[in-house]
Length: 356
Image (cartoon, rainbow, N blue to C red; front, side):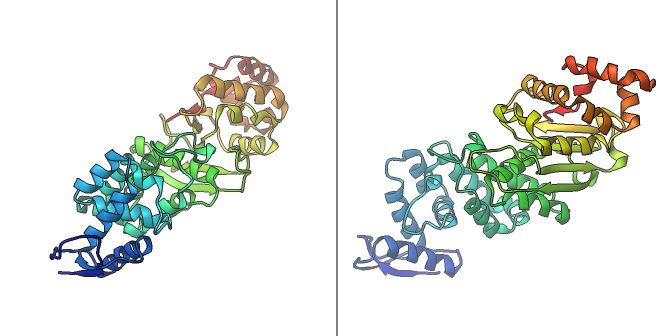
């Protein structure tokens, strides 16, 4: 039994079994003394300390308080979030958001210990929350605009579930993990787009099918999500290419307004051309766009504008095998067929645009 001697807040003196490590008791004491530096002496447990602090913090957030008060891991969950955002003695909206509390408690459940361990245990979860304090939650205001409404609970789930899925592939997971915890918001958003796609399509993105990840980042202004030099690329092993499995999958979590500007980006064009130089059929390439930010038709129109503006450069970048597969075997007619296919966004030329 671990007991805590702390300043009291009107609690009756009694003993409570507390089975967490002693350092958590000390942590709870520190929280109490930070917010209540001058209180009379009483003898209380660590969970009672947390509960008293949570009650004050969650005043007016009835659903969150009910969860913390009644869930077996409620107070521990609240403290994990508070400490993750380095806000000891203060408060955070994530600790007041029911969905975030529920998701953190889910992964603190002993039944999910293997999933939690896949991301580095409790410390890994705390680090992820700390890195993403510029997110939204369902009861939060503000948040970085690049995330476009993506919530903390969703991002925690994407991160943990894919981490567990790739638990036996540390080289692949380390790339995804670095993107999900990157200092720049646009990079984390792009990584989340990739994580969510993998989570929702586990068979297609099975670790054994993947040759490599190529994740490259650059710093962006705060309100821009177009990163023409960035890559969120998955290369699949040759033996799995075919059907809905391409050779290369590039993930783009762009808003509609960003897609509309790709025709003006030399770096975006260069990246696209490099992919065209590496494939023999258009089915070997997929640009996986974020359907929550832009629909298929505007994305296709954006590429049509790019094709129209840079048709010569794009045609010249294509491998001969790709030209033959799209435009026929007669070289003298290929450019003409290319121009005709550009006008029809439902032609085979646009089959690389995908949401899966």
